[in-house]
Length: 148
Image (cartoon, rainbow, N blue to C red):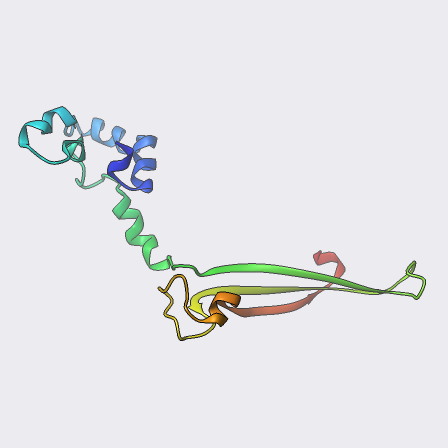
């Protein structure tokens, strides 16, 4: 039955979050795929599940995505990158100076070359084939020793 709905709904179903409230309310019953087979549906398993699905208090994937969906973005990732360097004396034994920096970088859905739309894959532009998606430095700072 896992192929009949999304990953979030499967996790909700596996956790039995909806079972206790339904039992407390003496609400509904479970519909089996064999009960729906007499209706000549192409996929009778799609109709299987609790009869109280969608009732007030029933948690569904839609409830979660309704809240989280606005925050979801395609191929937009944020990375924290740290770099370290040091300068040594000519013999290479004594450290004369060291520095550590941190950058927050965000990858965007758009390609480097706007010739290709963000949905185009693979890109036709040579620049996009070589360099990929657009990145933007959100912040940059030098770190002191106790921040490392």
